[in-house]
Length: 178
Image 1 (tube, rainbow, N blue to C red):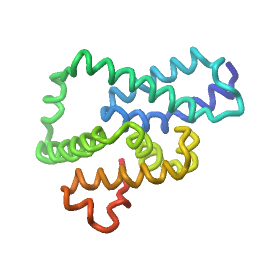
Image 2: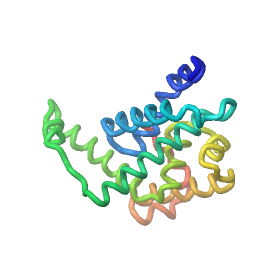
Image 3: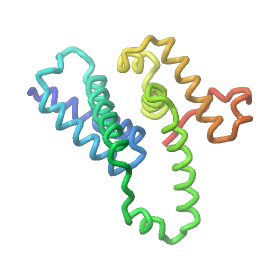
């Protein structure tokens, strides 16, 4: 493993963390996903080809780990900790609850999107990658990236604003901001 590889992985960490947060919807799970992604990448550094896109390789590792976890969760079910209830109690519980409801609504709407659309929303709308970069990372033609993003934005807008919102002009310009 070279120093260049280590440096590039460290530089990629903030972007990888944002991507993981979109995938998981939870900061702790996102951090776990980033850690596992880095561990797997370091263990399999020989599989990475110098001169290719490291970010694409790392995003794919993260995506594959997350998909494996989701499959396992379907079998085992979801567990909820008591910490969630404790976190809500704060100086202004109303704002905390409203913010969490908004975040939960966006997370739920994102979770309803097909995996390919959710990944593209994470890469383009949240991580700020270009359509071309997202196409390279996902191995999808750029036209397909554009159409999937348009559908994803319309669907998110419809789910967050109600069914009549999908027909509102400009609904495809929704940008998810963190």
